[in-house]
Picture (cartoon, rainbow, N blue to C red):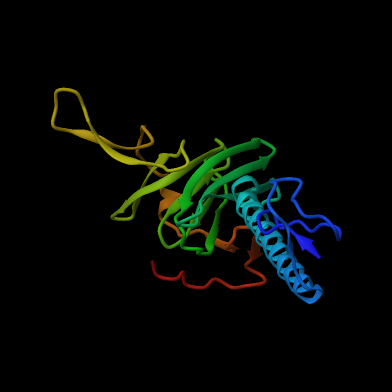
Length: 239
């Protein structure tokens, strides 16, 4: 059967020149033609398989950047819930941006940033502080590298900047990667600590003096809240 050694196309018996490139056709026995077609078919299947696998992998990676993984945390006082959600932001180090979205009678649908997960894939423990004397209520979240509060009355998130002698100092979070800085007052050698440019303040005593009531944990990849009734509190893994 005549075939073109340049283009690889086969021709009917009696043809001598390739219609595409003008090269002289070669004759080859039927069994050799069958072997060549078989090799070409295998190569085509492998190429398509690699392309499909590549497209599927990119789609899977892309879904992590687009789709928020989330779970709902019901509040113990029955006033609503908080949706905890995360989205993959850096594929090489598996860093996740994270938010909380507050759904209560006072604050509905407000989403605020919390510190990212830098690839540790750690669970997040959740604690509850009921309202008292016109302050709160609060949720406190803790993982091996960060600790932060959600003020459910004001609808803001607060990074724990430090703990000193039973006092807790916090600053409002307003970015996906909250930054703590010491800012000097103009013309002086004194200054204040800030979180995302917000001055750090001392948290209410009734919150600072207690660890709060453990109500459950959020499992990685942040799409499941496990209440305390199903899984008692356990120590966090070490960072």
